[in-house]
Image (cartoon, rainbow, N blue to C red; front, top):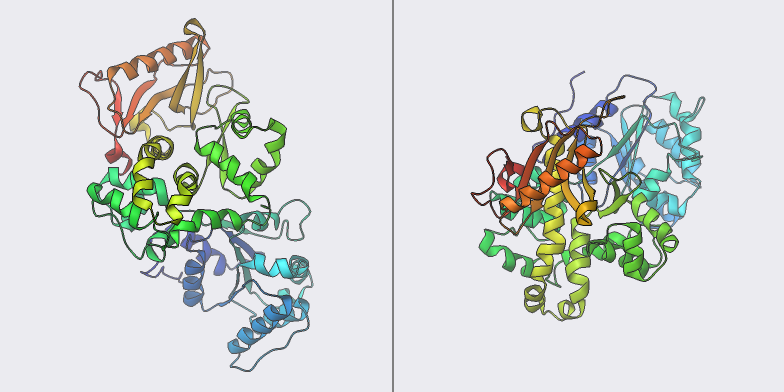
Length: 479
């Protein structure tokens, strides 16, 4: 069977397309159910619409409505499949049975499935019965894709004792474009400008098209004006998007509490204790909001490379970081249209709390994907880390620690130690800190015999840095 070719209007997404086509055209009778999830604006519906067109499938896009309204609209759209008229259904059991009778082979897509389960909580159980042995879905070979943007709800479909647990043969998350693809999508050739833009809008495709109507910064000189006329423009949808991202999650009720948690992380308080202290709360009080934010993929927990049991939290969505660090503090002025003075007063905070940490995460991502020619072998783990320096009564923060794979009975190899600075020229003084860290790790039992010292600089490097130190700039991240 010839596989469907990805249409030219679908940018990037080669892996996702191949995975979806493989599911839709699989000859296996056991591939019946797939789950597609991902944050809003990532192009899930766009991708699935293109897939349905290529394989001649059936797609139903749910909206927020009552069960009766959804059944009526579903009956109308399914009837179009057989030539017109309408089907009338009393419940979803009738609707699903007719669906699998009408579409006996090929692909069925139900988009924004969480809207349906909100009005009809028993729907996953009905789908389980339809797909099970003797179920009416087994009369044909049709495959069903359930898609949704509420990540907590979609993840719950296959968790614990959920009815559909063990039924899905595909779990695909459509993630934002990576920084390289995002720069291409925005038409940005300057790596430094690409970092700045990505630190605000990340890799969400819709932010360029629908949200700023293809308005991309023309140059570094245009960047400040671009921020004012797009992200901080109260008449653009991007202005309130960060708030909507949080409000869309079903498990989030107390918005002020969750904004406080995110604000603490955006301000540089990455540990659980640091977040609690920043909020004036006790550590156990923030356990639930942290868990909800993790389940919603709004934050991620990252382990310290050198201190077992110590973790740091990082916000996954750049626009939320930008909102919490810049916009929320200036909201009264921004709502009054005073975006230029608000941005002028916030720019230093933007560089330190938004761009700096974002550049660090991009450098870690680059290091994780680096080949043997960079660090001598492929990395097993890349993370930030903290090394205690008892003699100097201080700690050394390592922004990019590259470790080799763990091997039983052998010391853990430290492939590289790196420091990251976005808006400061890197000097030889930075290298001395890395050397000190390398010596301390050697004493602790790590294998540092082949450790590469690295400086990741967004503003360049002084000539006094020794030649054996690896220098990585924005151009390397986008090479």
